[in-house]
Image (tube, rainbow, N blue to C red; front, side, top):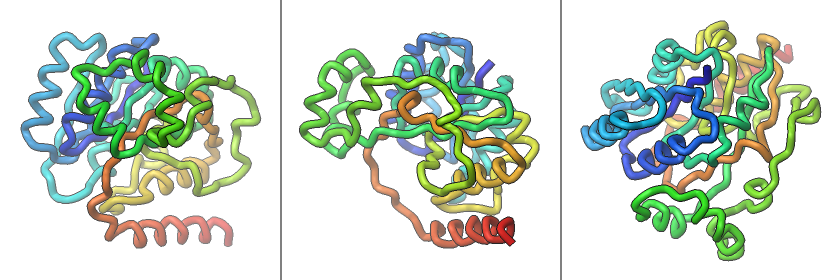
Length: 259
């Protein structure tokens, strides 16, 4: 079984769309573990309401809001998961109906997958957040218009799906295209490296660190582009004060391996 580890923090409107998109998957052999980094009761109430008739099991993990501690709550979600394969997703992302299907097709022993995202601008994000319910057919029907008006930054990856193959494999670690909002690996591999580095607090680069340490253990990175794209709602990043320090620490690990 697959476990979707869904990170969220104080944006229930976005989480609602994310959950609704997960409820319409063509493959329902998965569970959701919501890794909540200290949201208020609005998020708790939304999740409780969704759990009533959701087509798959939803587990809500919450920790006190003591700043950005995504690594800690994700590690709790890894341990709480029942699936042997993990998909990491953020609550500000909307998934396509075949999201689980495509990730399952790309899953492979001794591999991790780094998926990609389609960025939505502020105007389109607000429009989607105003919808009563998520409707993928309605969205995809206006896709060309969204692209022409710069509502989305990609068009063809949402229209064409490419299959699996060795061409997806990275030969070495590269920083680019690592998105913690859409990646996957085997639970056993995540546990082997001790999960995320919980000493990395504040926004930024905890996902690159995770991927580097997996690759350093011999796990092969595979691209999930043109297969698993998620729609990323626009928002501002409020606090990037730790990003430079987190990046420095990842670079140190890379240089240490090179030496």
